[in-house]
Amino acid sequence: MKKNLKNKTLRTLDALTHQGLIKENDLPQLEKVVETFSLAITPTMQALINKNNPHDPLAKQFIPDVRELTHTAEELSDPIGDDVHQKVKGIIHRYPDRCLFLPVSVCPIYCRFCFRREKIGGVDGALSPQELDVAFEYIESHSEIWEVIITGGDPFILKPKSLQKIIDRLNQITHIAVIRIHTRVPVVDPLRINLDMIHALRSEKAVYVLLHANHVQEFTAEAIHACAQLINAGIPMLGHTTLLKGVNDSVEVLTELMRFLVKNRIKPYYLHHADLAKGTKHFRTTLAESQALMKQLRGRLSGLCQPTLILDIPGGYGKVPVGHQYVHWDGDQYKIEDYQGEFHTYLC
Ligand code: SF4
Image (tube, rainbow, N blue to C red; front, side, top):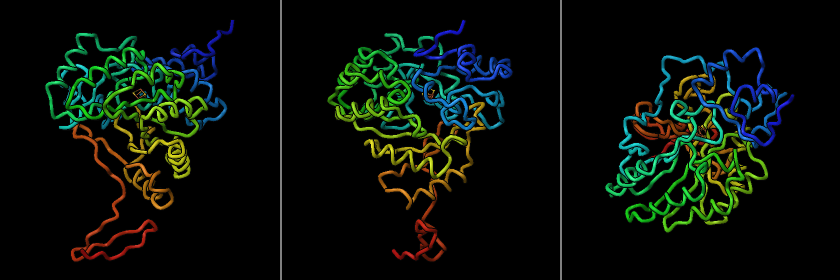
């Protein structure tokens, strides 16, 4: 009997096979993939995947691939060095004025290129009340922390009441000015953004939502509505895009995405050069390819649509911009490159 999996998050290879999303021949190898890296595909993304297109940008992001079993020498279990800066469970304090706060380590969907793919997943994944207390005490006792970035996992997988308790507690910490939430939920599971969730985000602090979106095809009408609800409630949104080979590594796809974000009042913030997560080589562009794409976006796209190309230095050394360099010094004077590749002398 055919299982009715409509409107259910797909969490097993069996379910994916029933939906015709994977080939039975690949099952033995894919079993090994999902033993190591979590699997979930929300109904919203499932409905958008075009099974008949081998280059479908959503299938590539969410359907397990046998290439994930290939682990190269440069790949790391902790590609951006979170462990080096973990102070207490759920707190990563890498830069002086801000810290990451990870109240939950699960997501409604699992991206096949995730940089925390070896740390997320499982059944519950939320900090216990005691662990939350210890995390808050760390933030309270470090007056240099100006901004708290709530991430995970995906914070919007929490029930609105749980998220509200976190925001309320942060509201009481006088040295915190900004609360930033990193999420993929408004796109991959947009109905979670309801009035209760909006209410949970009410704060005297500045609250920003950073949306992870990689392709314009991810956006349903519900996703656009979810983002509009957040923005209309006074919450500015920023865009985070991971540059992924075969998904969005073309000027046309990036142009369309960045314009779409800005048109929907989401300011592109990061274009992230893919991290050295295990089993993700097939997603990675070279730095030269990433820089060449950024160079082509300059001049072609409004300044509002320009993200910053970012690399998270392996080992925990933090993020740095790695875009094309327009300023050159010839030993005597500056030569400034314009967006068309012409050089101009600049005397200062
Ligand atoms: S939503 Fe974010 S944390 Fe979750 S799997 Fe995707 S990239 Fe990783």
